[in-house]
Amino acid sequence: MGQTVSRAEVDMYQAVPAESARVYRDRMFFLLEQVNRYMDLRDDIDRLIGNNPRSRMYDNHRNHAAFMATVFALNNYGLLLAVVPWVYRAYVNQGFMYEYFPVHLGAWRKVLQEHLSRADAEPLVDVYDRLMASHETFIVASREISFLEIPTDSRREEVTARFLEELLRGDSAPCRPGYGPGF
Image (cartoon, rainbow, N blue to C red; front, side):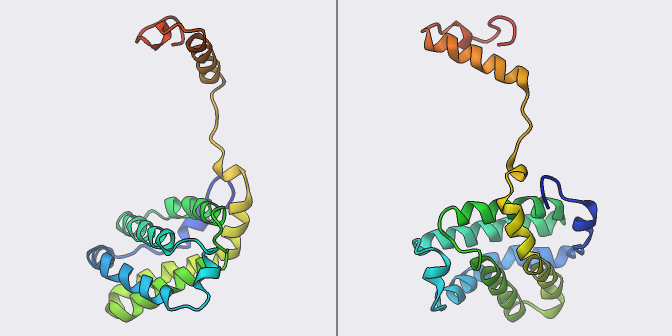
């Protein structure tokens, strides 16, 4: 995965029909509730979430549902593949186990199959299957620094440093619009 997602990786994801995306969005909160119930029933859930409060897991599930509704509506799998390693990294850094992610994705898969028509569920489940199949790749990508790097502009860094120096000296003039070159 690395810093950029290849066209070939994105093309592995099939477009979700607009109707399936709409059904997902319209039933999102019900589906979310079912996923939370399913996850709560697991004997190993506290270990999987690193003994974090369940509310942190629920927050992730809610964010996941909203994000996936957007991905499905836009059929933007480049965005999905760029964000997943960041999510892995963010939650693992909070104590979640890598094992949590396929369990979580599997819960969505199960809930979609149980609560949506086959026609609506199938294209959504295909996306979850592909995400689950890419789990090891996401782990590797989440450990890379490069996917989080943002190119810097040395000129902007120089201007920022000068700005901060002026402020630390007590000169508020650089805070005013139009102050000097580069500010």
